[in-house]
Amino acid sequence: AGPTTLDRSRFENWYRYKSARARRGPRMTQTLLAFDYGTRRIGVAAGQDNTVSAQGVATIPTPSAAAQWDKIDALINEWQPDTLVIGLALNGAGEETTLSRLARQFGKQLQTRFGRNVRYIDETLTSDAADTLIRESQPAGKRITRRRQKVRDQIAAELILQTYLHEQSDT
Image 1 (tube, rainbow, N blue to C red):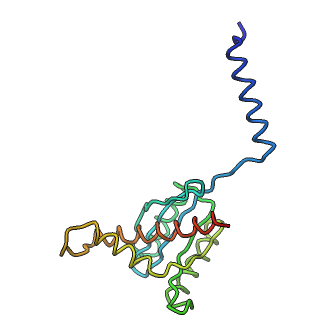
Image 2: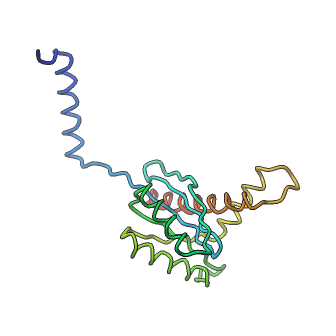
Image 3: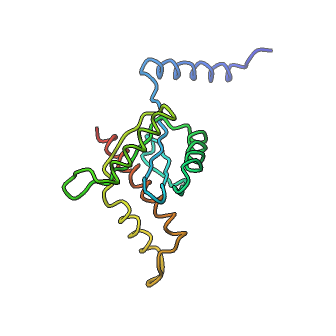
């Protein structure tokens, strides 16, 4: 037996809706990964442009280049990002620093290895902002421990990605 009138009606409405959306062009959601590059650790956050939000997903220690790239490879495979965002630590005058040049080299390596779009954004003071957020969320007088330092790098990456997403949504 064929579909009932109710079922056919649903299908026709769905088909009209799909056809109208196709004429307008689909809104493609982009997944992004952001990196707070440091010489000891790299904070990583993931997000999507349609939600304009980010969440910390990893802190990668950098002493071993091979292990670092293995972990980044796993994150790229897991999240399948369209764009990679790298924070650049600029000085007070907005000029590049030694760390921002290293972050650019890291971004070029990401682009070469994974063939993804790489974007750069000023991340000045994101680590300080992350420290402030952590300090405000813990009892007075308690020091920032190693565990919290890992979280700090992820929070800094979140702030980098949120800044990038907000700048993109304003354009």
